[in-house]
Image (tube, rainbow, N blue to C red):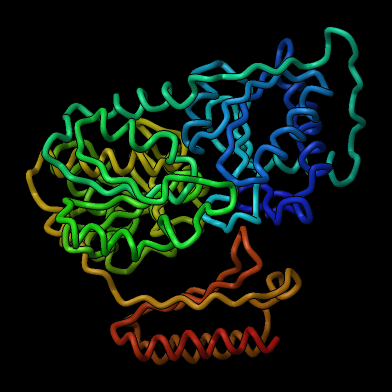
Amino acid sequence: MGRLFGTDGARGIANTELTNETAMNIGRAAALVLAKHSTGKPKVLIGMDTRISSEMLEAALTAGLCSVGCDVVLAGVIPTPATAYLIGKLGCNAGIMISASHNPCEYNGIKLFDSQGYKLPDEIENEIEAIVLDGAEEYPTPVRGDLGRITRLDDAKNIYIEHVKSTTDVDFKGLKVALDCANGSSSVTAEKLFTELGAECTLMSYEPDGVNINENCGSTHIENLALYVKEHDCDLGLAFDGDADRCLAVDENGNVIDGDMVIAVVAKYFKDTGRLKKDTAVMTVMSNLGFFKFAEKNGINVLKTKVGDRYVLEEMKKGGHCIGGEQSGHIIFLDYASTGDGQLSGVQLMTILKKTGKKLSELAAVMQKFPQVMENVKTTNEVKATFADNAKVKEVIAQVESELHGDGRVLVRASGTEPLIRVMIEGMNEEMISEQAKRIADTIRAL
């Protein structure tokens, strides 16, 4: 993880940690790096989520890009996967999504994508960091016609909707779905997408006001959706996050179907229908033990990566795999998208419901989750960088691993996007693993 870019771009509290000056300089540096790898004037597409700070950062990024001679296409409020898709569709050299994903409204972020809609590789991000933070290169100052131009893409959301619709060959007539848009990017696309596919839709949290994004709604607060689905006899619910690159589901009984379980449903269906490339799914070390047992039982290979959808994507591209993702709901269908796409995931899940005629609870029963508890420890960057080598932390982790007797696991890792250390334990006894997670977390808090 770099000094400016984490596992999911540059992120911080808008206007204090992620300032206009920083955004402008990221734009200038990105334009400078792009110019080295482009013939003619580079063109960059910018999308954003519904945060009040997104327009401010869009203006700063745009000014930085244009001042170094880069043309800019403004797509407005769209999902992150729409930004990634439109880059290639429009022949842009790169793209930028302004979003802090599932974080509260005071945060914002800047994600950079290459010309194919993939997140920039670490070496390119490091090059941009060196220019922004170290002044490794001077910015050119073009004048007259060499300055960048700004255009607006008013039809961005509709182009994306048509793309997602093209990934299914069935209509959803007869399916009743509740959609929680997290007051984020999917607020501008979800109703049109799922209605045009034939579903009966009810929308929740779809009226963004700039500050209510992810506020007690969406994939990080799924309780209200679960209750609504059960009380209103829906076939399922889908919950997206602020930039709609995640999707969690709710079955007809109000039970939450997390990313691991959605991938299990998809992977089994793909294998049964001969579509699971190399009979493999790509997951992270945070995936539930139940997924690995499901995969073993069904003859599905599992490749494990570090936490972060960028690492899942790298492994998928390297091995030519078609499905992968995270428990959090980042699910990548590489045949259709270059990044996690919550609405695409929902469309694929509903396609399986329609084609099999089964209820979601029945499909999801292929995987039995192990109890899993998580403790998030707020901390400093210094502790994040050093806790893993601390003798007391090592000792308590070793004690807990011994107590599990091989019937569980411990994972302690620093968040790539927030000032947190995450303590995760899985095991057969939820009361015991809750106590164990607290013990490890308290040891870290005392550092």
